[in-house]
Length: 347
Image (cartoon, rainbow, N blue to C red; front, side, top):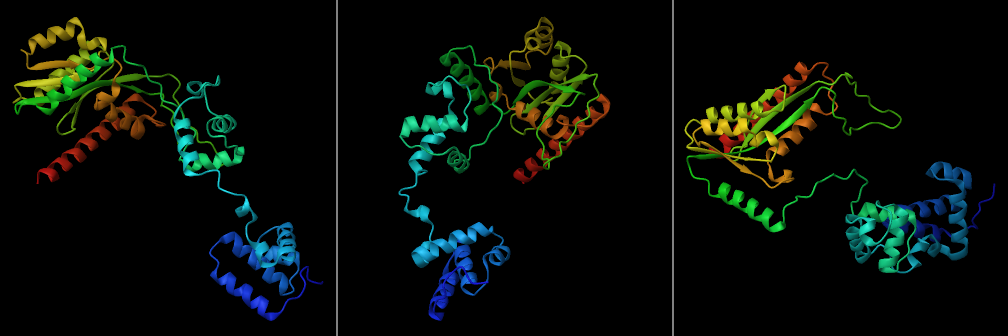
């Protein structure tokens, strides 16, 4: 079968081989290999099979080589002008993705690639294809995810800043015989929280749920200095659970003259029972309430997030007792790790 390329001198083949050895671009190397195979008398289909490409690719490269010679092997897209996805474009796209379409004057509440193309055209005058937008989103590290619901603090910014500033100052200037803890409660459900997990294509993991849900509650206190967690368990999230934790904290710090408790505004923290218990503690425990809806300021919230991620999410415990065993083991283990770190830092 005759070659689809005309014969050339030996020196031309040698030059092509030298260029192939110097080339570091994968696409350009492939085109050199196609031409060299064809010039050595191998047919288009055999060349395509040997190099793992389609035969139409072989014909296209051969056509370009016949028309333009070695220059025809270069990527023709390099002559398209300046790249559209430059730093300026990507910076604007990064800012745009961090906002919502409605903030930019569009009626749709969530971004699509098509809408991003249109919005960026309005802002930059640069039109790109939807597939190019996919590459642009990958380059800025964007991903499709589930937004986090938040509730805004009803206080004025000044009042919120004043309260948070007072608590931060207290913790920064904590006297030697004073202790401070972050306090909060967490729900433990027998029906597991469903969370993302790695899965292979075509197979979706299953999480078996008992059906009839059973709840238990933990009230915990995280030491501001050491990070160690003290907790109590209960069947109801009531004032008795909170008071039991305060008693546990008071026993944990027998030498402390004052124990400061930073906590949220949940009703059990300021009930009549809680106030009576505080009066019975003789002023050794003082409560410092955070502004409403400020969970990021309560450092024990991170403990509960890690607890859900490591224990309760997608769990396969058949009873609430088995689940609570896992919860205790996790908290004990984390306390041992934290205590070990504290010892090493002290040493």
